Length: 462
Ligand code: NAD
Image 1 (tube, rainbow, N blue to C red):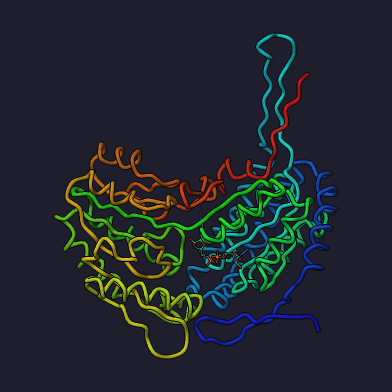
Image 2: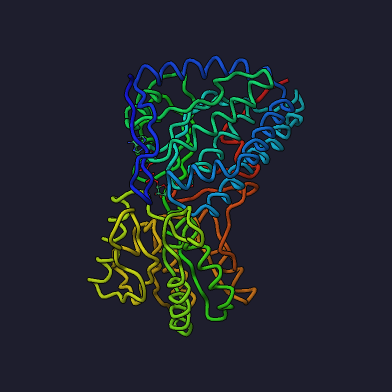
């Protein structure tokens, strides 16, 4: 039998599946099939492509419970949240079905009057997507759907922790594509434990034309360097360290609801999770006390059990990394308001935790926590607050809260991030461009911008 690796349920530590551990020959063969698929898919008119995407949306939606159960089993998030991710992940197919028929072009007269300038778009070509484990469905569908809509074949390498959801998506896509007479290999999944080997092999092959990556900043930098040899198009959705700035005149009821959304969605294992609560000194104690009450009400357990609102972390290593950040902050003088201790027993659990009085040089304020830990620091003037919010190398998401229209406008302008939520704790939307600046990467997923990542511009002089 060829090589396989195990998939583990992080709540029970039980093996729930085994998948192929593919190697070089399989990777290159997949790229060859992708090149073939591009030709066949190129014969599909935009409207036909749109209809296939729409069919994928319908099929995933019909199988919501099955997708959600698979995600909860391999990744740990509560079943209700997994269902939310199915809706969100499927939505990219519906959205890009609607964009497939709206790929823009333009025509203009040359200024010298000696001809016309016609601008069109062509598909980039075969794409490699590398995706993380935290949103096993949506992080891939926001790459697959625009690639298909633009006319590109795509090979996806899911995280080794969460390949099962992706294999299920591939099955649904193959069904919809082949039912329409399209190429079965338009979307291929390569499961492997050798991510570095796969990316090096495929990126060194001139037939590949684009790499799109969602994951950590460190790996993103490696991939950007590797992409230079063949000058690949690149999209990099990398790490974050989102500030959550609460101004003096904010509405605390709204702030608390948004804080729980921005911190606890996906157990804090989200790139746009609020990492740093920066609160005006006049509200800080009330905010911290109320947040602590809300966090203490969180029910931790197996995501399939009723009433559970916080599942396990993905691995023991991830859980231990979070614990180390908390311990480091406490050693530096932070106060634990709730949580803060790894529970006994099976599963990689870490409790909802609030830390106040966190010293400004504590590691936890400068690194992505990727877990259910809220840190609270204070500020006195708005300048100080905005400076603290922007004082990070990352620039993915930022949140700001105020009831004053002038302050809101200032926050919108001065918070340096690719995405800014004003009086909002949930910002993800398939119809909006998702992505970061600074060390959070470049490129956008979703919105009208998302399809541009898979299109080349072609100028015709007529
Ligand atoms: P990771 O970078 O360790 O892994 C991401 C993917 O890259 C996985 O498939 C992994 O197998 C693969 N990989 C690892 N090393 C590689 C290498 N040397 N060459 C090629 N591929 C390699 O990240 P993770 O721990 O899985 O995910 C968490 C990170 O992802 C966080 O930093 C988070 O902020 C980020 N993230 C960003 C976004 C976004 O849209 N900006 C969304 C979700 C997660």
